[in-house]
Image 1 (cartoon, rainbow, N blue to C red):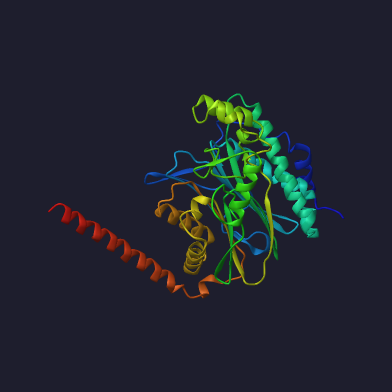
Image 2 (cartoon, one colour):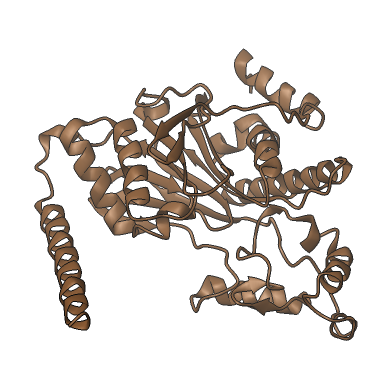
Length: 389
């Protein structure tokens, strides 16, 4: 089967240069900063995909990243709509303990996916087993390369990064997911949560599996954090929970977090944090309206159903997916999100949004919230007046 020239170039570039093109540059700053009050706001990383411009299969994209109240910006997003076997690509990266791992992955993870998917040929074949194996291989290879790169840096780098990537075709959505970002599909106006967060706490099935895996690997959980340190159980990087576990134990003794006697009883049998992805394949039918991919800076403050309703109302007002994306990010900050917020929205082109009536229940919901806020404030003023008597 012959490949078109651009596809050959992409594939060969990945195969020949994927392992050696990335270099650390501390002076690189790929974000454009603009000020909004006390918060700094960052535009998204976008490759070949101007916002609100139709790409593969008529998809219209919106993307945004917001620093919010955090001292550092450790998120990034990527969108590519260059038609890889009829699929578009998007990803959200959520970093911690620094930006190094995010910077590496935003440049290298797509290359690894492309290589493992045989330049995109596996996407066209729709062999579910082969695609799943390809994503698994790509994520493991990317993590291995990242760990090797982190170990070669002159300074101690404990950074890590979650990553959730999507490939969107005419009738199929493929997801490869590590961490606590989430993908939500709006189908017939209703929110369908397609991923589960990888966290070492909670009572849902995914969390219980993560807790079991960590304990079987010899780890422990304190205050909902692995070894009292990290609150996400799957991520790229994080050397101290993979290749530097013994050093992590010794450092904990030096810092007084545990004793020599305690670590003498610890038997680490595997990596406490892993980059093995959950992989999903979802059919996109005529009732699929848009896909919403975002970091936990959104989902910890706005529910999936509220986010979907918010975006639908935005699109019904003006039809601009980029404006809807930015408004949703600002709504998360307005609800006092304490984290960076990163969002990608893919409007699948199934709806003529401005011909649809606005969802009036959202107005009632917001009005109810307003009255509740007024009531709480009034109660506080009344109680303060009584105490002052």
